[in-house]
Length: 122
Image (cartoon, rainbow, N blue to C red; front, side):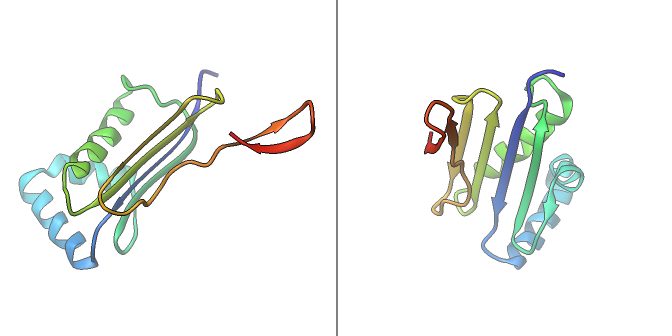
C-alpha cells in the first residue's frame, strides 16, 4: 500500500551526436550520473526518458534520489530541454518542472464530475 504517483522525466538533446559526446564526458567526469541513466532511463535517439506509473515517489528512497540527481544534473545545462512531471493520488497533487527553450512534457488533468456525469478539465 502507501501513496503512489505517476512520474515522467524527459531529457532531450539537440542531436544524436550530442548524446554520444555527453555520454563520453560523463564516463570520464561523472560516471555515477551515467550509471544512473543506464539503470533507470530508456534511451532513444535524442532523449532519455523515465516513466513509471503507481510508484512510491518519496525523496528519501534511494532510487528516487538517484533519478532526481539525473534530472537536476541535466536541468543545469542551458542547451538541453528537460521535463519532470509527477501526478499523485490526490487531485491537486501535481508537480511539473520544465527547463530549456522548448516545452517537451507536462501534465493534463481531467476528472469526472460524479454529480453531473461529465468529464471536466481540472
